[in-house]
Image 1: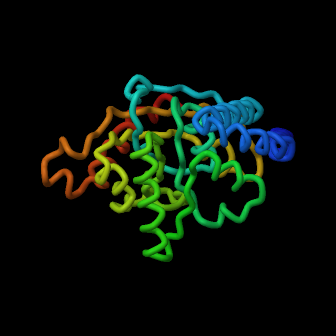
Image 2 (image 1 turned 90 degrees about the vertical axis):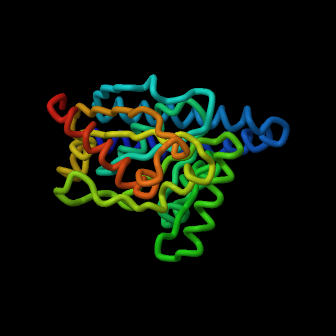
Amino acid sequence: MIRIFLALLFAVLFLIFGIPILGVEWIIGKFNPHAADLSQLRMVQWAFRVILFICGTKLTVIGEENVPKDEPVLYIGNHKSYFDIIITYARCPRLTGYVAKNNMEKVPLLSAWMKRLHCLFINREDVKEALKTILTGIDNIKNGISMCIFPEGTRNKTDELMLPFKEGSFKMAEKTGCAIIPMAINNSAEILENHFPKVKRTHVVLEYGKPIYPNELDKETKRRLGAHCREIIAEMLAKNAPLV
């Protein structure tokens, strides 16, 4: 229990002491938006790395060379744990916004940081609102900001390897032509969810697959892009399962 207490304490203190920092970053952003964005990104990445250290999470990363550093991409991955966001965001090489459930927008301070980091809040129960969110994500990518979405649409709480992928999750890549980076995350639920509320020392394997450019796919593969990416992630998960 001590690990989850320390991690929560650190997160709360970061959010509280981050209030004046947000103010300073807002002022910087008026003169140099890109510098403010990068500064906020690195601060949050540092905080996430501290949380992983507190929780005793050992991370093995495979295929990080597959992530382009000079162009925005769409990250997609399996989703079994809240820690999936912490693990993957801590390693983003450039500005990246995550697509989160709209109820996250109601969390004080946290939502302020998320908005500064170009995260978007999606209401999957309202098709029109969800479409607006995806269109904003398309604009972000066009403006050089990578996006990340978990195509299962929610955290997978079942014994299944993955839930079906929602094809709409890939519109941001289809409409912009940006690379899709598949992420396979093994064993993240063992940090917390499999024995909540206890946090355990855990070995997690994160693999980045090779970039997938929708415009380079044949018509049939493009038509079933979500299923195609799901198969790629499933192969990586199966391959890396013995490592954890």
